[in-house]
Image 1: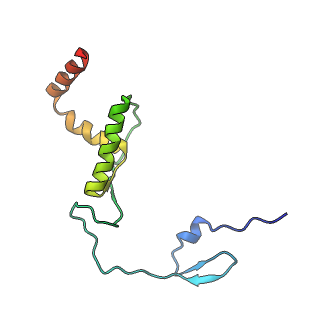
Image 2: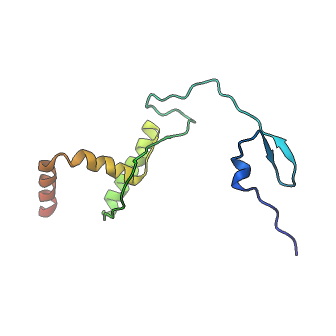
Image 3: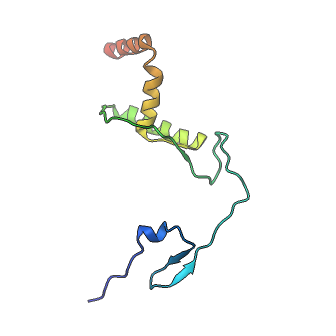
Length: 119
């Protein structure tokens, strides 16, 4: 029966040293890549740069039920923020921002709820 090849572990990929052990026990020197440009943090997306992530801090789990069309709109908004502003955010983070903005305006919330009730 053939033996399975030894696959590299996470430690092999994220080792802090300059050398990496490859399959078969061979050690090779890790190449360092230097970039001549500073990353653009002006808020505009830069082609090829990794997206910035949004940190939402401590959160609690809550379940909301949304109609399919609203869920699709939420996902499209999240992707649009990634494309236009190079900000990677989860659906939960986008909803958190929307709730934080909307929660201050209880009159607007009441008006929208009345519209929903009317159908």
